[in-house]
Image: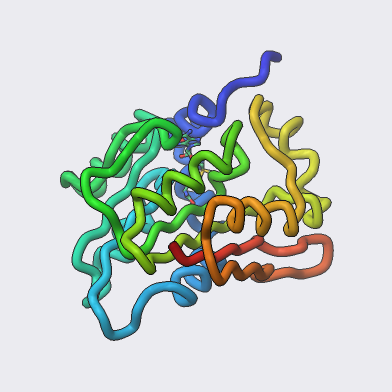
Length: 204
Ligand SMILES: C[S@@+](CC[C@H](N)C(=O)[O-])C[C@H]1O[C@@H](n2cnc3c(N)ncnc32)[C@H](O)[C@@H]1O
């Protein structure tokens, strides 16, 4: 079988309802990622990069201090699914590598997306330079990385053609090369045979 692009494969996941199981699987790590960056008392705007069916956009949009929550994804089926839950202007159908938001955000979040990009550094640079307000934060979570050896067979299992396997120090270096400051990394919900979700936070 020929390998396919992540946008094509995840579009199919949305068609057969696998997006909902994926959201459940990501829920705990995402809650901890959000806790580490969302301001508790001041107002903030929020963007989810690679938002899938939009579940994080809806979750954050309900918070009392959130002024605006938006999501962008390249899969037609994922964005259609998001709109079926919530017909609004908050979802953008676009490729992350070419999209530019009309207005910038205080927080950009991205869960399980960055290793699907051919050039993650280019997107990190765009996010820092033009997607985020000065002092804004990017929080990224990924499960496919060198130290999480039980994820290494995913390219074969998923038959996705583009998956970049980098180590924790390589991801930290990319954030720093993109100009993020105060870069922090940690592994969330690690257990036996699972090194956890690698979470990186950087300040623009
Ligand atoms: C593993 S899913 C994660 C979805 C969501 N973040 C979640 O946690 O449920 C990866 C998502 O990234 C999107 N994606 C991958 N590459 C993309 C690109 N270059 N531009 C836009 N979306 C992309 C896919 O369409 C898919 O919805």
